Image 1 (cartoon, rainbow, N blue to C red):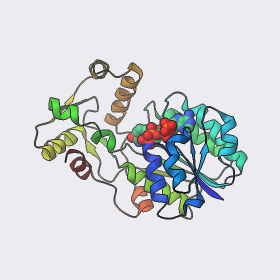
Image 2 (cartoon, rainbow, N blue to C red):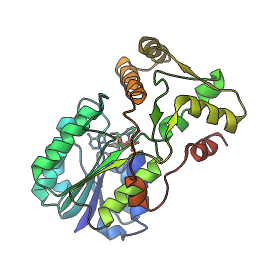
Image 3 (cartoon, rainbow, N blue to C red):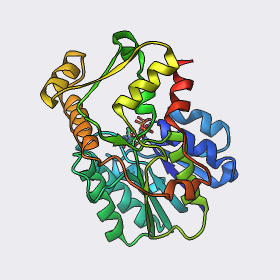
Length: 284
Ligand SMILES: NC(=O)c1ccc[n+]([C@@H]2O[C@H](COP(=O)([O-])OP(=O)(O)OC[C@H]3O[C@@H](n4cnc5c(N)ncnc54)[C@H](OP(=O)(O)O)[C@@H]3O)[C@@H](O)[C@H]2O)c1
């Protein structure tokens, strides 16, 4: 009986696999991936690599065979995810897995952010499936803010429509650790964990931290949503992506990416990564 990880060739999934290997033998792991060539390194390390495309249910029929536990890392094609997740949930149920862990979004049941809809619908399907579950309502990744600092440093400004709202972000490695805890620990079945990072920050605080760490003056430039949308489209983003980012920023401004909760620290046994540490690593 194995632990099967989906999305293992993605950013979060790779961190989950690495952290799981600290706890379990590669023989007890399988990855269910869209592109098996991207998982060649896993195979070399003795992990069972299985083909699983959420759009091709026939691949899912074999991907979860013998699974004791499955981590479903939410897919990344917005608007298609509900059907994709449904295919996975049906296959996991048919395989008789004893636990399904799902990466959802913070405040999924009360968030007005458009992205939350597919997550909440997926959570409902999981409950209806009857498969024992753990829902990990992840906050925003710190990497959303640290992976693309070049324009901020070039223009001396971070743009957005988040106003003075706070985002309780944590590192992907923290969310990987939470997934590993849910997969390997006891007593998590049936739980819905809200996983904000420990130290929420505003966009002005983000800009101040970037200034401090880089030595370059960077300010937060708050703007009306229409103007932010135009700026993102002008910078080359596809319209739906620009609209998703604007919508998320407005949700951030309403406080929907923040929350009081100690769940993340309790799951991972340490504080989550702080913004300052993440920015320091990114600019040095
Ligand atoms: N909390 C946040 O701030 C935040 C930010 C961005 C995304 N997310 C969500 O969190 C998830 C994990 O984040 P991440 O950074 O690891 O994303 P990522 O690097 O884009 O990884 C997504 C993974 O899903 C796999 N996948 C997508 N469509 C699939 C399909 N049809 N069949 C099988 N596998 C499929 C991808 O496979 P390939 O390797 O073949 O592409 C990839 O391994 C994302 O997918 C998204 O739902 C959260």
